[in-house]
Structures are given as C-alpha cells and as structure tokens.
Image (cartoon, rainbow, N blue to C red; front, side, top):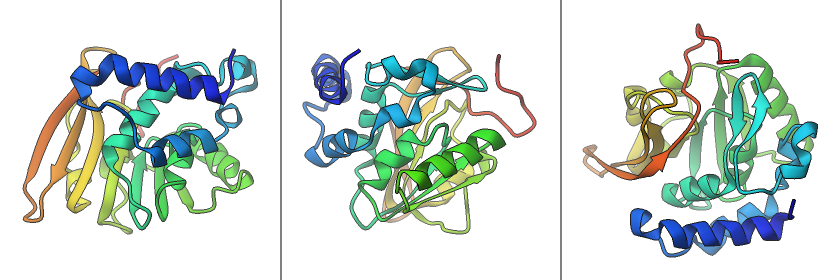
Length: 222
C-alpha cells in the first residue's frame, strides 16, 4: 500500500475532515517534515510491512499498537514542540512517536511499561540514529521525575483519569497531550495546559480509541 508521500496526503485529507472538531486547518511544516523524515516501516513488524504507510494503527505485539499516522501528527501538533524543548513520552511502543518528536526537540525521554517493548524500541531508535531519545522501562503513571520539568508530555495510551505526577512534571507554560477514557470505551484526546502560575486548563479535541495505559502489575490484552 502507498508510500510515505501517500501517507502525508492521507494526513492532509484527515486534517480537512476533522478541522471543525480540532480547530486546525493544517499541521505546521515542521511537524509534517518530521512525519516525512521518519521511516514508519522501520517501526512496524515484518508481517505488517505492506501496511506501514497506510493511515491506520497496526499491531506491534503484546496487545499494543503503533498509532495511526494522522493521530501521531495531531498529537505532535497539539504539543507545540520547539527545537530547544525537553519532552516526555509515556508509552514508547515501537518507538515511532519518539522518533517523530526527536526530529523536533532537543531531547526525548520515553517510558514503556513492557520490558520487551522498551528494550526493542531503545535498540531500534539507536540503530536508526535517533540519538537524542532516552528510553527506559517503567510505570508511565508515575512519569519520569529526574529530568523534569518538561516542556511537553505526550501519552500514547488511554488513562481513565489524568495521572497527577504528569501534571506536576510539566513546566509552567507547557502542555500535556493525553487520551482519557475507559479501556476501549469512549475516549477523548485532551490537552492540558499549565499556565505560568501553575494553574491548569483542559480542552477536549476529538474522540479517539487507544490501548489502555497499563500498570506494571497488569498484563496486556491478548
């Protein structure tokens, strides 16, 4: 199925389709350049390679998925990343979202709760030269406090409620982009913005479907 240019055209078409909900008429050129720069097929299992540039999610094993390209681009756009930023990603998965972010910011810290995915993503990102990404295995609900505060936090799994540590680890003026809702139920993509005084405001963008943000003691669905 199509290549990376067709994927970018599909993203543009979906931006037009969802603009009444998102308020976004077009994604910025830096975001689209990052989507073009990252070889999505390198983050997709061999059995799914022919669908690597289709505008849809794909399984990556252990009950997890690589997100739809449009959603990756949307969440990145909503984060408003700047070149000097240090950002946190919760839910490394195959490493694709981290790779996109790495093209846009100074440093990406990425947490993955499943040890095998964390190990494989770290090796993949290193092999592909995304050397400003640091991965480790851990509970995303707790964030990664040592490098905090962050200029942005992005969560690639749905939480039933926003984990307080993530809000605490945001720098004033920064944003958290997170899907919120029950597992495989009604979920919304939400932007949390912390102002310079530390108060937060929330805005729901559109309905989404993500795998759940799991605790280390939980096992992913088969």
